[in-house]
Amino acid sequence: MDNTVVSTGTEGKTWGGGNKPLKASYGKMMMWFFIVSDALTFSGFLAAYGFSRFKFIDSWPIADEVFTHVPFFHGNYPMIYVAFMTFVLIMSSVTMVLAVDAGHEMKKAKVTFYMFLTIIGGLIFVGSQAWEWATFIKGDYGAIQTKGGNILQFGEYVEKDGEQIFKRVALRDFAVIDDHKERVQDERKSGLWFTSEGTLPTYTVGEVLNGLEANKNVLVRTQIINEEGHKTVLSREESLRQIRENGTLVVEGANLHVNEYGSPLFADFFFFITGFHGFHVFSGVVINIIIFFNVIIGTYERRKNYEMVEKVGLYWHFVDLVWVFVFTFFYLV
Amino acid sequence: MADHAHKLEILRGLIKFKSNTQKIWGVLILLTIVTAVEVILGIYKPEALMAPFLGMKILNWIFIILTIVKAYYITWDFMHMRDETKSLRRMVVWTAVFLICYLIFILLLEGGYVFDVYKEGFVKTDF
Image (cartoon, rainbow over all chains, first blue to last red; front, side):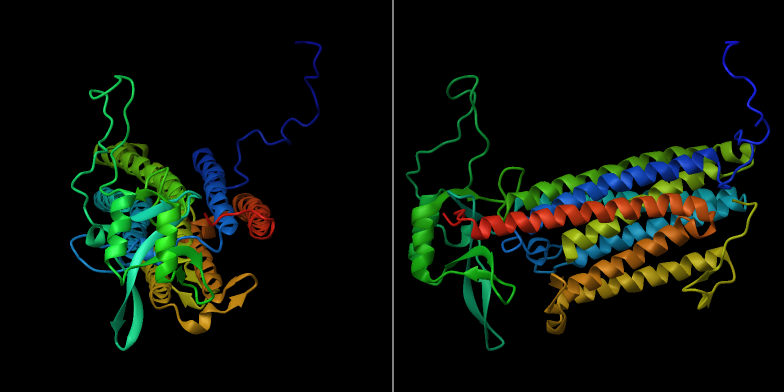
């Protein structure tokens, strides 16, 4: 290529990659740029969640009423478990940064120990997330979906400390079982070999309606949020009318199609965003394990620098950073 | 980076730490306090903070501000952004902050608009 310009008169003046204007190595800089792009991906998801929420701002589920369980404990404890998960992740971030710090001082034993703690923290978090999903999928009280896709829940007023409080009632506590139910699940072995359907709900709409008629104190709660910030409770007549005329489907738990807690979009975004974040935590744990073994066999000792631990640390802190936002927008706001 | 020292003060020099390890624990305490405040506010939801302010409850604004505070300390101290050069810091932070603010602005505005269309545009949802 003799005809291209070979001499520009700037040789030695332009940056040839030799000196470092950002005083960061190539690998670390690229990790930062990856984190920026990943942050934008997560922002896209969270902003889409915000869009859907603003679209249904007067009927969005209230997170305090959805995530109320703590493993091994019965009762109503909103926020407690997810606060614990947040703390575990922040704590594992701390052990990670301690590992990076020990790496700067070339203390192999300390790096190994802190990396180990970080991996344990990550595993506890992923396990908790799995439990949270399982609880959410299994559901709590059950609900009825209407023709228009609205969710109708059940409850009754009870006296507590001299105040009338609306307490949720589960379908299993009032539905009247019909012993002559003919509807059975369509399986491949029972009809055409190429047709089947998912598990049927435990109760039919008819059984729930019979139960509602038999239990005079049970009322229907819609998703519309009133001025006091609570979901609207219908009168007895209106409750019966809604179930009789509009009820089409019994919903128990949540999946990508239906959601007993309210708008199906809430469940969709919950699965998608916490799932994507959980996947990040999982891959972070895998990468941490690889680095952990590299530390043990002394790769970085021979290399005379532990920058690899620092780069993985950046990713791990980023996962923590994202969780801080997911926590706020899914559980608090 | 073994070749350059860490900056060891947070809150604009209000708290100075003796070593990097000590700073890490200090930041952990700060983050724990902030999270605890969030959880307590989330459980008790004080009535005074439920008043609307700029389109949202004051409580929600507090949550978002506290989240940004936490994000700041995670990035600056755990990810050592405090020790990076100004140009790297701006490249990462300003790009992300600008794009995220823009995205949030357009999507939330559009979401609010669609809500109004559903509410006032003769769209029946209660059936």
